[in-house]
Image (cartoon, rainbow, N blue to C red; front, top):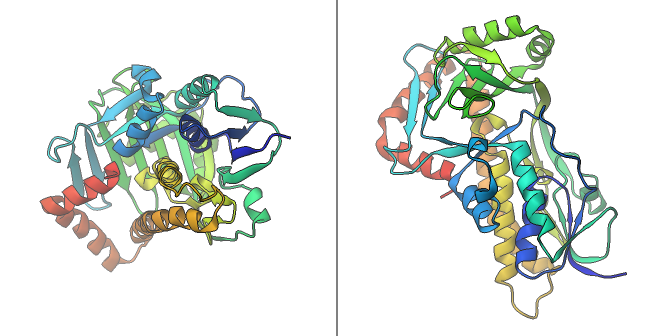
Length: 369
């Protein structure tokens, strides 16, 4: 049986991007994934991609293939605390950036990655594991392969459920994202141009399990009423424009990112709360880091060399740990009902909003700089 340079296990955006990136470097890549059907129009997922992720997708010749209404730039973001006047405003113009992020249709991105893979001569799809010098595990939070290599996970269940859907709004979004920390839930509206250009949002709502269960079962009118109450009408009247989807939220970290002949990337390596919209950005940063390590390796060093792969692990441990701690701290801080914490967290938003250098630093981190 033919031996490949790399076996990529996982058919999500991280796995497909890695296969494309390594194949473009002339490596023989096997992508372990059964062919997928055409993306469903019911898929309501949307990704917030930072500048670093967009740059990677551009190099892979995927970004330019996305339809204009499948990638919406975010120029402003307003974050509200759970007390009057507690607000934080980020502006791309004030920070000297073209945009803060792009909101991308998940199904459209997956379709473009598939289209690019069809023209990748060094990438071969396989339906079962094949021999390879390096195995890259990108199978997501439910990876089984990682257990074969003795990987263990530290998991913390937030007791929250993420609820996502598509919405249309009576007011134009004008490229502005919104977020409300409401103790204990966190609601984000991501400006989008599907299904209605200029008047659509992707919703990501982190809710305690019982409340999420109630809203998932609620009729459209009841759900829309809850949205109006949560947002105060700031984004206009919001109407459901897609199915509702839900998933449990966790903080999760693998105790090792690499070993002899294997590495972990994306959700197989780390899960963070979606309140910062950084999940896929972390995964694509993993891809870029691994590609850099492989390209810069000594000519005599094998792709599966344990010392080589430790370079990748060292490059990714700190950024992924920091993002996990940041999102975890924000969620815990705003979920608490303690009056002292309520005062501190809301005053903190006000102080950050007035601190120009700190805002610029936070913006740079979000952009992936």
